[in-house]
Amino acid sequence: MSGIFGVVSKKDCAEILLYGTDYHSHLGTEYGGMAVLGDEFTRQIHNISQTQFKSKFYEDYKRIKGNMGIGVISALDEQPIYLNSKFGPFCIVTNGLIENIEELAKELLKSGISFSEVSQGAVNATELIAKLITQGDSLLDGIEKMFDSIEGSCSLLLLNKEGIYAARDRLGYTPLVFGKRKDAWAVTTETSAFTNLDFKIAKYLEPGEIVLINNKGMTEKKPGRKMNQICTFLWIYTGFPASNYEGINVETVREKCGKYLAERDNDIEVDVVSGVPDSGIAHAIGYAMASGKPYRRPLVKYTPGYGRSYNPPSQDTRDLIARMKLIPIKEIIEKNRIVVCEDSIVRGTQLKNFTIKKLWDCGAREIHVRPACPPLMFPCKFNLSTRTIHELAARRAIRDLEGKDSENVSEYIDHNSKKYKKMVEWIARDLGVTTLRFQIVDDMVKSIGLPRKKLCLYCWSGECPGMKKSSKKK
Image (cartoon, rainbow, N blue to C red):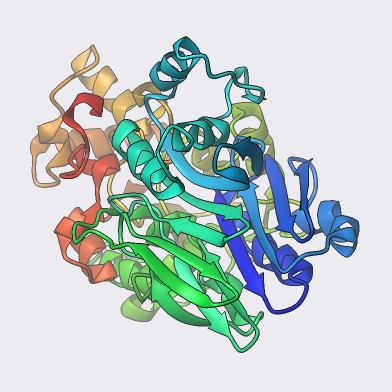
């Protein structure tokens, strides 16, 4: 996932843009970028894989002048993209995943369109989106036609002389929210970017809605759609605790997830409740509050040096971060029966090799793992995360139990089935833990509080009503 931020200010916007974009650093690890429009466009892109966004851009922002700007923390592509088009020059940042990117790129190449940017040996997705938009009769028409042509998702900010166009993807997989203060408008992926910059939430964009902000204020250019399929994983793992999506706070949802996990745990005795830092902490706090058991920190994260191990595209990098960032405290671990709340089990390798092992090595008496979401069954089709079925711990279990890859996994999705129980037992043995119990879908949905039909649950169920049927993987 990437994070995008834009601002229109009555005065120079560079400082707001720097800090607003920086508040999205938990969403991406590869590139950061900013573009500001003053007398002309000024654009900066830096690789942030080995450093923080602020340290890369701190000197840049002092030289940038203009009252409108967009920024991005990118999980893969170099952004923002600048294009001098038939609509005039513009800069664009995006958040999402284009499943049919190769097909679309080939079509554009055949029509005479060229690409100049390459990301990981492939077409830069943000440049592709920009080129698709220029195929329309106007910017608005181009955004609409781009939405029509893509499989996956794309939310975007487009900066030109008119202001900043903000467009949320048609089914709302990723959020966009407007904020206002007396001297500026802003738009963000994460509402936590607003708080310390004194913005108040003014509007949550509807799926498919297109809005323009400039020095005259906010203007709706295209109304939104009623159907919504926002990513459930935003609340479980991806989002920042202080952020709100659809008006619902992340931290409180995670506490409720932990509460439901504890309510289903009436057959174990434990001494300590803990969470894998950082995203597992709130789940563990909720578990501790509901169970009455003390919350303690047997594992602490060295926050100054290491970010999230889920985001980097390289498995080697993910493993290195996972190994180095968590430091065990033997005095809390030794001889204790410990509940470990985790946001999810994706591949399972990091939890097994760099978390569970550290707890056993420090003398834990028992380890009970409680992920805050069900077993992941399908790679995300709407944002950059797990890319293949073979990576998923649940699918490895099924493959071993069945002796082959299974196309129909419906029984393994049903938490009441015998096959589900065998799969969970297999994963528990593979992790080397005393017990393993996953959150169930109904409790996860109740924790968020939105109707099930408004949430994307594709990762767990393989179902998403708004998804094009041709793009669904088994």
